Image (cartoon, rainbow, N blue to C red; front, side, top):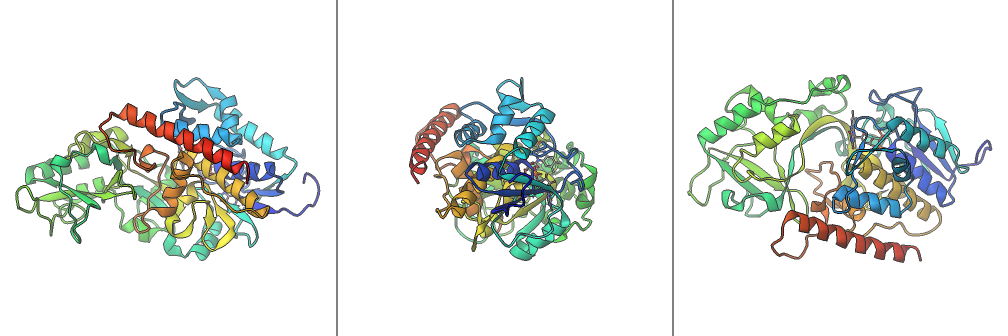
Length: 451
Ligand SMILES: Cc1cc2nc3c(=O)[nH]c(=O)nc-3n(C[C@H](O)[C@H](O)[C@H](O)COP(=O)(O)OP(=O)(O)OC[C@H]3O[C@@H](n4cnc5c(N)ncnc54)[C@H](O)[C@@H]3O)c2cc1C
């Protein structure tokens, strides 16, 4: 479509990690793509250049090890012909078992490959509206306000969030069940586990929380941290970091997220002084979220302080808490695991907007959206990868997680269907997850190559 006024069949909004991969995948399957990126004329506050696929912070794309979730996802993306993983491998810098890249060379090579693709036109302007025809929206965590408003009109403002205040998630297997009890305030279910604290334990925890070291905020995040309107005050108000609540007063948490009213510890028959509640995070019940413990503490401090909580002494943190500016949808309500918007088969979302975290996860959803957009435009059915693969598990999570408490997630083995129950250590478990994912992925590739 270079230099000619051909009508695009697909519009991709945002030339970051997900949008670049999506545009490439669709174009490689014969679709004429218009990729709209607002940089360099309008910037996000975090990006520094006008290059496509700029990495905004770390230059690491995570583990390459075949028995790590990140490694499994990368190998699936390689198997599906990912442009960005190929460019990353081409511009890798030594980083042990991780894939780290020379960020400038990486972004330049993606930009050059996309700009020279015969079926992709790159237009440098801000998109202010969701297109009415076939489109992929991949404008990322710092989507411009005009487009955010358009997305809000499509989804309803209640289903679009602007601030990510996430609590840590721990692996269910790493919780010491002898120290916790499993009913909830409102129902007798295993959806919640309660970690009971005595008065002295609670006071020690509050002191440590208030005094622990925090991550310094970036300037463009500070306004939001102070609760200044960034389109998100509804979300922000209910979501103060646990260390800020601890700082407000010794008993603030005991009357807030740690209140033990209505709970009785079956081992003592008494109400604990306070509790930390763990809430089931996924259907398979392999992950638990620390309710109300959204935090901006350093990861090392989170580990130190949260492991003081009864039952969490050996907790494995699948994801640490964090606070940052982030635009994302309530994906379980709005998206299918094919990345399609529910009710509009020709509209896809990809990248961090979908609630997926991590560079490689964002590339992955871009790849799937571009691949499926091409299928739909060619009259085929959009497909979701099997849930036993890392890509399938991630997309399945965002489409099926609990709507009410939806929080962004990166690739991890806890999202995969559980393995048959038998005693095994973490290395063996990881190896088995990876092996099963590899087999399912190969089977799926063989099937889809025929359709
Ligand atoms: C400060 C910061 C630090 C981060 N650090 C890390 C990290 O170290 N590791 C990690 O894995 N993840 C990190 N993330 C998350 C990171 O943003 C994602 O992993 C990844 O970049 C998201 O990919 P994406 O394609 O969804 O969005 P992006 O890569 O941000 O791409 C979105 C693109 O859309 C463009 N755009 C926005 N609005 C419009 C519009 N209206 N019209 C046209 N174009 C538009 C933007 O300019 C941008 O190029 C960080 C995020 C932020 C904000």
